[in-house]
Amino acid sequence: MVLSSDKKEGETMMQVAESYMGELVHRSMVQVRFNDLESSLTKFNSCSLHDLMRDLSLSQAKAEDFFKVIDIGEGNDLNLNHFDVSHIGKTRQLVFYQKRGVEANSYFIKKPRYQQYRSLLLTNVIAEYESQPLRLGSYLANFKLLRVLSLENVTHNRRSVLGTFSGSNIERVLGSLVYLRYLSLKGSNLKTFPSIQKLVLLQTLNLDVSSTSPVLSNGLGKLTFLHHLYLPLRGSLKSVKNTKLRFNGLSKLETLENFDTAWCEVKDLLKLSGLRRLKLKAKGGYDDLKEMFNYLSDLALSSNSSIRCMSLVMWIVGGETGLRNDPDMIRQLFCNQKFSLQELEMNGKLPELSEIFAEQQQLNDDHIDVSLIRITKLCLLESCLEEDPMRVLEKIPTLRELKLGYDAYKGKEMVCSAMGFPRLTHLYLLYLVNFESWRVEKESMHVLQELHIHYCPKLKVLPEGLIFLNRLQKLILRRMSSELCDRVRFGKQRPDFYKVAHIPDLQIE
Image 1 (cartoon, rainbow, N blue to C red):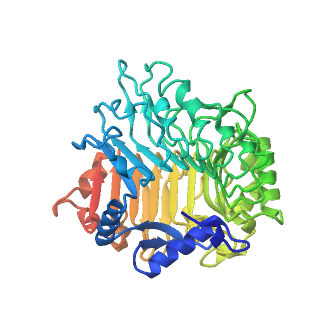
Image 2: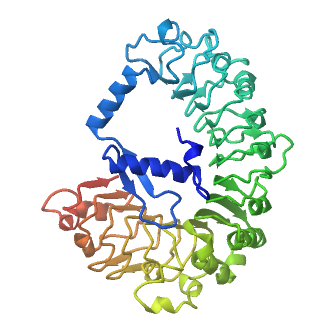
Image 3: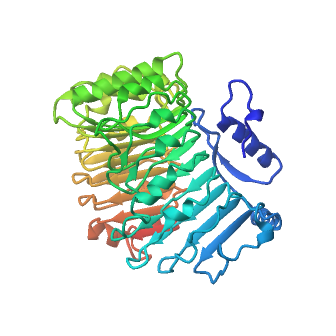
């Protein structure tokens, strides 16, 4: 729906789409929330339709036969056997829903080729019957001209026989849909993708499947038109020859998510000159992480680099050595402007935060210079910090979400100072077994919306300063001491209920 003819020199298709959305916003047809970060990949955070506009859009789409919806389980008898012949050639989009426990095979039958369809979306389709497994592969083979195919959360019963969804049929059929521009297998449990490299026109590929170890032929480099690639978030994506995935030839790639250095060749990042969003995971000892960091530095400093948004998850292996003795490396992650690092998660022992920022004179000011740090989401796990981390972290003005967990802090007391955390909206304090005293001063975290405190057994009293958090909408206390929970339960007779009385959503588990 986004025309390349509208693309100006130097623009991406994403930016063309943004201009379309901007026009809809200007006409008050679409409601949007904007990103307030200059380094965001898009300026729009989310969009929605007003009820009246949605009703109008649906009625107009129905009048023009813009799409067809099959909703099994709602008493809808519309299926592929009952299409009005006069409509063939008009409807281009087909959407299919299935509810658990409803037999679907009558809808998936081999019919003459449905050449008119360009978009097919299947949602929550479940092949759960051993006696009649879902024959989705032979069904998809009838849609040769598809441009868009979404099989999100489409799953099969492990006992299903070969030749059906669980076998090679659907995986072989995917390779025959050579006109595909968009393919999403997110949440499905397909395991092998032997013919992905045949889809040479693909622009978006989502392989974030639920299988723990899917197998992919190492032919990604043939997808030269690929702009957006989403790899599995969990598990590993193995190649047929058990070698690391290569990314040669993907010069047009703009988005690369869930890149894992354990099974992806990190040096190939230097060849992705068009990359604008990168989300990667690295696990290893000091030398492994140092090598990864050097490649990232080269990529960030390259004159061809287009990266505007980066997310990094680091699993640090090596105990007391390595990164714990190299605060410079962590400092560069935080303060390298070229990195555009927005989301950072570090698992493992770290130097004290005061050491990391020791050379920055800005620590003596109210805040660390925003031009040096762009991190909006920070997660520290098993960091074993001895000094109160809040004294440093509260000075990062861009921070929106902070998670400290699993002995990230080994000390007893934390203090959130006045004017600290000016943009923090979400705070998670998880499994801090030594944490027993917390002070929140007035004007600290003044825009906080959600607070989660899980298993901090020595924390017996919530801070008095919670009464100042006027925008706090949700407080979740999980596996906390009975003494603390009893003090804040609903009821004026409870000694500390006044601290949380203004919070609409209070959950004590």
